[in-house]
Amino acid sequence: MIKNTVLVSLLLFSFCACHQQQPINQKEIEANIMSVLHEQEQAWNAGDLKQYMNGYWQADSLRFASGGHINYGWQTTLESYQKGYPDKKAMGILSFSGIDIQILSDDAALVFGTWRLKRETDEPWGLFSLIFRKTAEGWRIVHDHTSSAKAAV
Image (cartoon, rainbow, N blue to C red; front, side, top):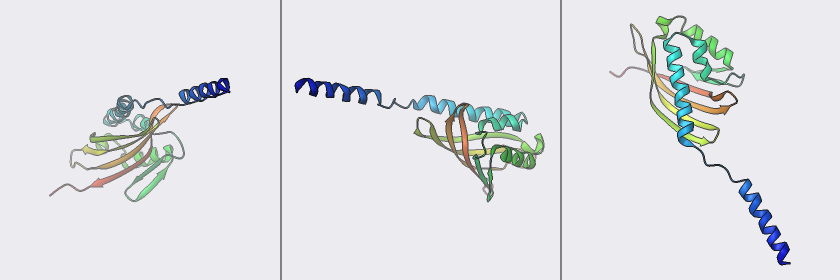
């Protein structure tokens, strides 16, 4: 009986030890997400929308909501950007600030921040909420909800 109890205890211990979750490396996840955002800023500021879109999950279920409209899919989102920002002048210089990253799990994060464009004639800005997921290609945006704000008077 003692042998069976010891054997069962060892098996339970082994099972539990093998199935313990690894601790989430928050700093690594935050660094990876910040790298994606930095690469997006660089691509936008170079006038390269396709490179900018590399930060998004290239899938039909990508969701982008802004201005009361929802786009589904990577290609649809790219086409919407191309229509709204047809050239470098319209794109201006993009910067992100106030980035707050909430790690939800080892493969998901919620990112909140502010975007701003500097253009010759105006400086539009707004807020965004992004859901990042860890994909085979790395951390990518799977959901983007972006709003525009009016300049403070």
